[in-house]
Length: 244
Length: 240
Image (cartoon, rainbow over all chains, first blue to last red; front, top):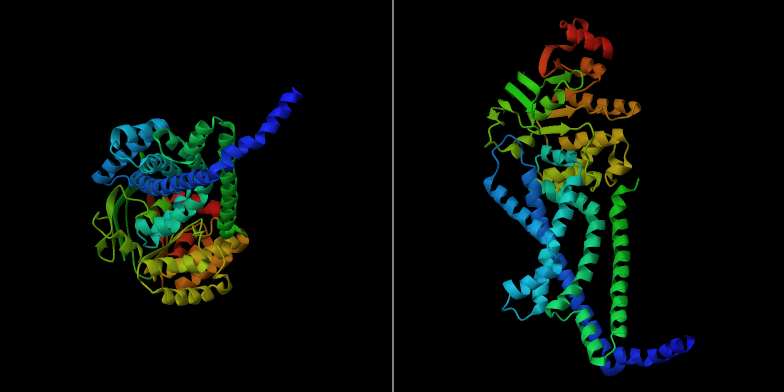
């Protein structure tokens, strides 16, 4: 028992050497981490833009003044947005990625690009619901005050409602970022060369999966911890207007 | 100035305003009183279309605002509104609260609006709060800011929806003083309130509402001295 533990510890050094240092393999992990971060950021920006549009359409539709004729175009777009959030939130991320790769974008060779699209479209649906919740959480009196001053709907949203909603949704948005960051590992399954892809390939090449997999797990963890810390700082900063 | 014809408003099957016709003349200070649920706030909120009337028409300076084609934003710029819960924008400094609307609606440049804000804040003795955030102010201070925020748009008419109801008693006076000063300058005002002293002192006309109707109205001294309707007498006996 103790003997085998000592043997295991003894072999650890060479295994780590093979996994990370030999043939400058650590560069590949960093390259993978770069792609992973790129995937996260691009998909999140894409998702937030998409989510913002969807959330504004849904909120504008729900806030139409009762009694007046409804805007038919808005009704149609709203229906599309509802279908979008329902389908995306109701199907697994990996299945969506496969559909993008093997059904919709079959000719696309750049699998990371497919990953951007798949993750972005996926995250948009979740972000839309987060933003919609945030917009609805802002007291209706704020909108009324803006409108009663003669501001139009878009200005009222832009200067009054959205900034307040943003502060309210920041924790959920941070959570979405973390989820998305980890979900980028699914892009490995469609051949996107992100962090897990390199770990897996190197594991196969050296016949030793433990060091690369534990290694990238620690990298994922480190990024999440750093991000959480940054998010806390931002939240404290946004709370500036709350101090008494 | 404002002409209301056959205004009705219902929320679902609940009829809140029942066929109200009323005219508000320039320079008038109309005080609307009545028990809660009588429809007085809804009446006020219909005047700038924060509530959409179910039927009837409202005309402001010759333009029908209930017409679906009316430019509601342009009309609202000429009517200031003060809310029970102040509704200051918590994400902006006081100065920004005041200057946002005049600048965005191109009424003033940012520099002009900043000057106007300073002058307005001086008027309510809150100059030193220009760079504070709403959360740092007392209720009375917030409401005085809300009043000057509306005034920054240079409105022709001011609507007050129970402006002192959410205040601690000792802060009511400072807000009423600002409103009184505004009245003395000749502003046309419609005020929904429970402050009978204010109604008596500042109002030029008192409307008593009950169950969606304007039950009785008169010039304040006569109204408080000789109410005619039994419902009015009953209400006044409880609040005075």
